[in-house]
Length: 90
Length: 433
Image (tube, rainbow over all chains, first blue to last red; front, top):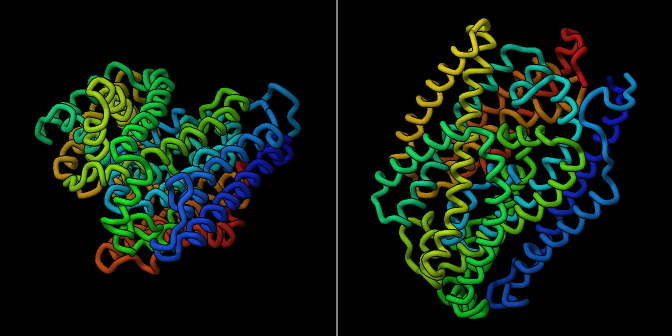
């Protein structure tokens, strides 16, 4: 069963998931605590939001959406989910 | 979309904004860790889980574990943890539903809870699972635009973003920092929510069940994109609404009621009704699927498997109905005394389920050496350390400054790997994948 080709695809996609989550965490953490650690009087504001929040949560979210769309479009592969429909080397 | 509704519901629509109202932007930052669930669950469990569960003919997470480990103990442990922890998740939903009804109708809490219980009963009897997925897409759309409208309404009522942030700063500068209203929300603690509500969600039975239900990989891909957008958008909006509501409606006593109260304040009545109907519907469908999940783990996983395998269909239906009714009554009783913040009840359930399931599921899929002894050890170690640390944290504050779930997740990983390696000669890996 190890040789099922679809599993190799699935393993690759699981790794992609881990990489995406790591990017997400770094972006989120970096901007939130990088810009947000000073005292609130020194905050700068972008479109009304504190800069740390704007970059970490708002832009961070949009970046992840773009990355997910790109991942789905270019990195994921369509495979049948049922056994026996297509070639399956066991 | 179904996943969004089930996963989110009461905690994101009432509990989360309630916490954000009290704690400030720091809680919004924390809530944004949930953006990851939209793509992470489907990429990690994703195709492999869908293929394997089809091979095992599994329709629940317990079915999968049964197929993978072929162990009665694993199945019983799984069913037991589902029962224990989903009770508190369900209680959270009931409390949320009752709050919504209470603030719309002005009834007493108990009266509202009773109405909610009756509604759930009708919903379960009539609809069941099928009704859930039909209404989900509609609900998702209403929620998406509803939260947007409400956010715009709050910003206008608060006099614009600049004004709102000035008011927040004047009241308490900590509200606009990542550290919470009292400065106690440490970076480490907030980051540990990545495990609890971000990546750890792969171990939740109610989420895993959705991941196996995609028709084909194309619809799974679509769900990846839509899920990420919708989860992120709704989370960001709802929690921001919670924070922005503070200058508009100061001094709300039960913070969990902030969303219904602010909706009634800033939107015209009919619009507030529509906006609030969406979370109520989401809570309903969550309660419904949780009820089904618990009763199926009692009836299908335990009763039919091990108590009475020869039961007839009719008999099973009767037992299911009885079990569902008993569960409903117990949850009703649990919900009579609501805690301060429903979100903590929900998060408690999340943590417990993750500690029990995450490694048996993930390593069951990706590590062929993983065996039933490892799974049993991992579940027992995960649950017992989770309970232990939960009570420790309640008494003495957070151990090492992280959320309760963090350590048990590592402990159960070590238990799984060690025990699987020690016992590897005792298991024929025929069912490994």
